[in-house]
Figure 1 (cartoon, rainbow, N blue to C red):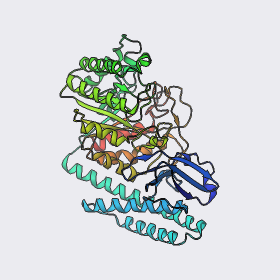
Figure 2 (cartoon, rainbow, N blue to C red):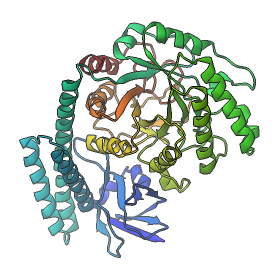
Figure 3 (cartoon, rainbow, N blue to C red):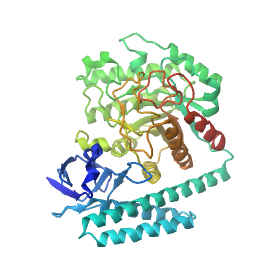
Figure 4 (spheres, one colour):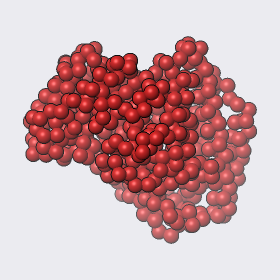
Length: 496
């Protein structure tokens, strides 16, 4: 068993820090090693079944940025513990340097203010690395280097976003991209329809098996039919699905008796996919056939069973409608869940296997739900988001991105899952203002990425049943949140 040890100064950093136990180590191919974290005093030990070099990823407090995930550079195992603050500073500075080189080679103009900040971060890191014989002092200086590196990273990424959007606008008066929102399975049309149409040019109709056929053989198509009619009447692009949700409790309860009979289960699945797609043939041209296929949790399906099931659904969908756009949804795309040791394939490897099978997959939908546990993601800065999209762009398929971010940490009576809002790890507490600020930061970056052809918000209203607590654009009393106003503004500024 391999062990990597890290010394943390000051030890008070470990107080009220549950995220340390969610740290993990990944390899050069971005796959996450099953990782067990142990803390003794101010030493954190990460135990794995391999002794390969790896990068530690851990949430770390950064002034002005909350507690985002930072990563070290690739480190070999050694007997002497690494000084964690110094290694996190090294990792962030290397990340910024590598991205700077890539964007400069593509012709990006670098702001002078960035150059000064980046140089200051390098100088502070050099001082910290040279003073490691005094861990307290070295950690304090390294923390300053981290803060400067984060400021530089955000400035660089904002400059990239601005210049990329300018380039796109030179080609198009308005960027050709879908900006949509998921509708509620219980309503025929959204509340405040005028604001919805101002904010979005697309809508995701929740044609989900667990809602359509809650009892075996008894179908309920009414709400979905009405929603499709409303969308088409208002000239919205309709996104159907996810037909199958492979998360815990995502499939109809009556399927439990077939969970160990994979062949019969596949037969039921294929029958529903065919039935649903034929019902809306010619009316819905973009389908999400399966969601949360990589992390799973539905029934007792193994990773191999899920991969086989997803492949079969894509084949059936393609047979029903040769011209349809067929997507699958990947959740937790940074693969933190792999640290628990229950998954062999990373999200990227899972998707790559389906792409290589040449089944007719049209694109990938990345679900990024910031601030939720146990199946959400910790906060990342703009540069990490940008690098994630670039990594997935390597598959050569168009990307959709589904987003969720809470506006409060209070209890949500309409949430239908076991998800809860995580501890404070964003720049500020979970508020409507924070939700709006997050949209202002991250939405333009996604619009600036050529590989991203669609962005969807997870749900519209918090007073309708939903999966992500307090993430809607309408409050529990139906009043619009500040985030909806920001969505409308970005739609007018950037999109058709």
